[in-house]
Length: 210
Image 1 (cartoon, rainbow, N blue to C red):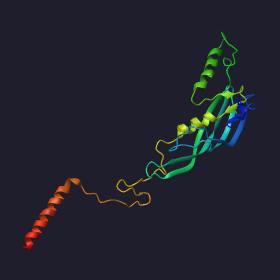
Image 2 (image 1 turned 90 degrees about the vertical axis):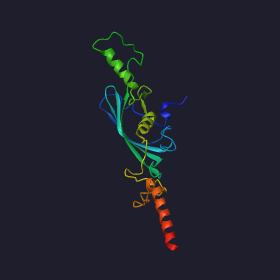
Image 3 (image 1 turned 60 degrees about the horizontal axis):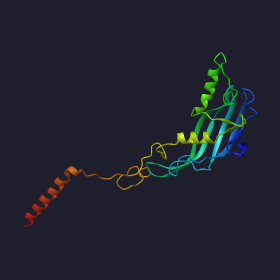
Image 4 (image 1 turned 45 degrees about the horizontal axis):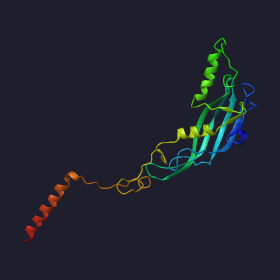
């Protein structure tokens, strides 16, 4: 059975979980988990995700506030050029301590709203920005945090630059490199009249040659 401490994403936090008001700084690379986008828009599994920030202990758990920077691979939806750049995302998530109910202490009939407090803390585990601590609070595993944060931030229509002009719809030339490129467009409503005009001019010239 795999040990939690052997996980590539497990961070030891027991030393700051002992009391509120302590912090632990993080500045390290972690491998990108699987499932962050796809081959068209995404971050490749195993690529380094740089994580900076800090775990801060409070009464109910640990708050991580930081920044993720991952190598983003995609292509521009307008000009189809490949995009290979760093993708930064800010993140703030909560790692709650195990509640008394989770530990099986069985608080019941307590006064002053203690039961309600336990329910609220336990319910925080269901929040999309909340992740459990492991081994009785000794480790914070950030694999799910990295995946969820990056997946939610990926653009639906990535662009190489905000003002990308895209490709010419007629010939496919890159309009970013040829901003003055255009085609003379003929109004099809007058195409029949132009043909009739050419025919009349040809007949007129034929009569003049007689």
